[in-house]
View (spheres, helix red, strand yellow):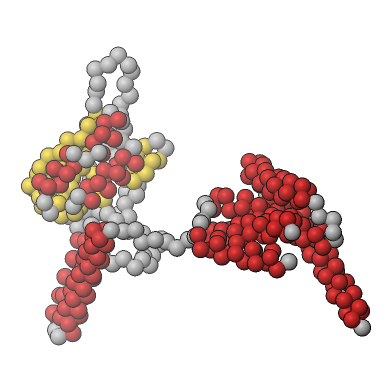
Length: 118
Length: 236
């Protein structure tokens, strides 16, 4: 858990230090990609806590989610429909659900430990 | 352990992507990429504007001073003089002086194709006047129509109207007064306008003339739609 947080911070710092900027045109692609990656990450943490973690599912999920989201944005741009909203919506909901599950699991563990102590 | 590293690496990627996105969304600061020369020219331009503004202020103050230090009779005289100067500037009086005479003639090419008798489109006329004004023309008149600040040049049912009157068929004569007529002619002779006129089968002929009389603007100037400009730029 701490390793994840540490790496997240390292990533942010690296990104800020390298001063990479992408053209505005591709900003929406990156936005959806970030959301997809974040969703996969939270999903991974959840399955890890639930002891259901599968590396293959995790890795393939990461890449397919990102590519599907980017594809959706691309099609949306071509058709003039804001299709990326669909990706944002789907990932957003999943994000909330997963975070809620993580919270519950952590809370249960905390309570269990306390009970054990008592 | 392996799965922890995997999740951590994903976190790294997410952080990296997020940071890049954040940076890209920051407002791009406009970079000042002008070189010294450009800045110098701009300073020069601003200085010229400042100078001309100062000059105008000085003139106005002088005028005010004169008004205040004179008796009634002289004041009336001075006011009349001011009015006359203004009328002259607005183009309401006849003016004489050195300038150029421009003749616009049809070019009749020796070809088998049927040729239409050329007309002067309003856009070309506007362009010609703009060019003349750019190179130092003081006053312009086309045939008997004096061009003033608000003179309309437009297409009315396929005919070109200046000052709400149709201009006659070519050849048409345009009279231009200029501070330095010779220079104006030199500029105009190499101007692109000549090519644009040639496309319409119109040839332009420039001629130096030391005694040109421009007619006065004969209509009423309509101030209904005129408002004072709210720009920062000074000048005349």
